[in-house]
Length: 260
Ligand SMILES: *[C@@H]1O[C@H](CO)[C@@H](O)[C@H](O)[C@H]1NC(C)=O
Figure (cartoon, helix red, strand yellow):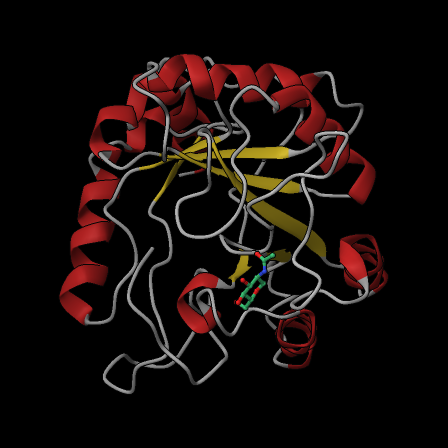
């Protein structure tokens, strides 16, 4: 059995992104299904971060506290820097990142490979190096990068631009890409482009979706290797029909929303 586990990663063409990130698949909590756009706030994020610890999930490996879409304003500042929405994050993201780190957790942030984010906020297209530098300075540990408002430029080109910008940012940042048509970036095309690529159409309530995502993700298991993972996205949300127990990105807030 031992040799089987050791041999498995070698079966795929393991050209992982060589940035030292994601030796094991990242696990944590993401704001989207619990807070969406309107309920996103510094206090809600911190409360959920603390719940990761008090429930024992952090000790089980759920280390990432990932802020999804809607954290930034549409307008950049006069110097072209992306700006956090001060209504939602009155103390700023540096303070939030410091607190999350002081809890022994890691912070993730979202952006889009486009002129705007997917729902509310600025996009990083043509600002890749500025944003990667800002994310590094903030202390961001994980970037979820989505394919929205891309002006018809090939997604692989836009994703590669942020990959290269992160590499020059001076901080190790796990790089996770998300495409509207996830299957087209599953497997080989994602390798070398990012630390993980979304393989499913995203999280939603209901056991059927959980099962479908699980099975789809498994279709690409041969492409998984340290630093290079299939990402089934947000597997569960807080609905009473789902069984309780360990969840990949567990939602804690009782609020639920449609999927991103
Ligand atoms: C900040 O977030 C609030 C609440 O979602 C929203 O109404 C407002 O438009 C946002 N402000 C900016 C400048 O984007």
